[in-house]
Image 1: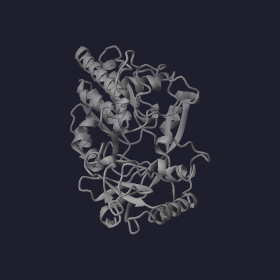
Image 2: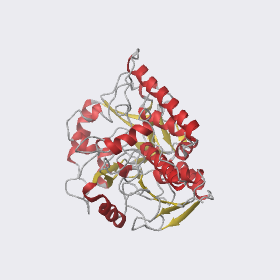
Image 3: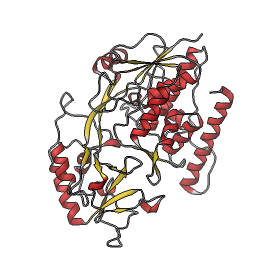
Image 4: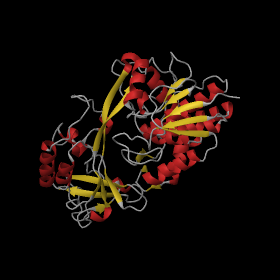
Length: 438
C-alpha cells in the first residue's frame, strides 16, 4: 500500500493537489484551519475561496494564461472543472461566480472518499510526504517553521483586493454595457469620464487617506500585477489612463466617441447583482473609498458590498530551493505549491498544485518524478520557479516569455507564433498523458 500524503491548505493549489493525489489511488490528509481560524482576507468557510478578483483572466489559448487553463483541462483539473461550471460572462476573459465556484470544489473534496479533512491550524510541517499549500497568508506559526527550513530565502510582498458594489446602486443612465472592441458579450459596465471629471478624481485619489498596515513592514514590496490603484496613480497623471482606466475600444453611446477615461465593472456572480471595480485594488480607508470611488460617474450612490483591502503575501525565494517538481531539494518528499512558490495568480497556483500533487502521489507509489517540459506553461512555470537566474526573484504570471522558444520560423506575426506555442504545448501535454498515464 502507498503512503498517505499530507496536504496543508485547502486553497486552489491545495485542493488541486489533494484531488490529483486521490485520483491516483493515494490517500490524503487535507489540513485546513478554516473555519477554526481565518486570515485577515478570508471570510467563507468553503475551500478554494477567491479573495481578490473573480476573474481567472484571458480565455483564449493564444494568451499564455488561456493556454495554461487548457493544459489543466486536458489533465483533468478540478479547479478548471469548477471554473467552467460556475462561469459568468466577462468578454474575452474567464470569470466565475465566486460562491458557486468554491462551493463546487468544497463539495467535490468533502465527498471524495480518499481525502480525510482535518480542521485546525497546522503549526509545524508534518512528517512524511507533504504538500505545503497554505498560500500567501500562511499563519505566523507555520511561517516561522518554513523560515527555519528556508533560512534567508523567505521573502514577502503585499497584495490588494478591489471593492464590490451592488448592481442596483449603479446609475445606468450614466454608464453603459460594452466589452472592449465589442469582444464577446457586452459583459462590462463602463463608467465614462471626461477630462475634467478624471482630473478631479485623480487629485482626490492621490491625496486620499490610506489604511495603516498594522503588523506589516513600513516599506512593503508591492507586486506590480496587483498594485493598489492609488499607488499606480501616484506614478503620473496619465498612468491610470494607460492602465485600468484606459478608454480604447470603448464608445460612449451618449457622445458617440471614445471617453477620456473609463472605469470598468465586471459581474461577480451569474445573477449580475454584484460588480467588481476592475483594477481598483486599494489600501484606502473605507470612508475614503466611499468618498473617492463615489466620484466615478454612475457610482455616486453605490452600495459597497465589500471594500478593498490590502494584505501580506508570503513567498519563497524558490530557485535552488525547489526542483521542477516543486519538491524541496534538501528534503525529498516535501513539496510546496501555490503563490508561496513564486507563481502569481489563481491559475498559476492551480498549476503548481497540480504538478506538486501528481509528484507527491508518484513518490508515494514508488515512481520517479514527472517533470513537465518547458514547451508547456505547466513546465515553464515550474522551470522559472526552480531555476530563474536572477538575484531579485519576483512572483511571475504565466507568459510566453518563459516558455521554450520556437526554433523554426513561423510566418504571420505574433498571433501565429502564439498559436504555434499553444499547438505545441497541447500536443506535448497529450503525449505525457498517454505515455505516463497521468
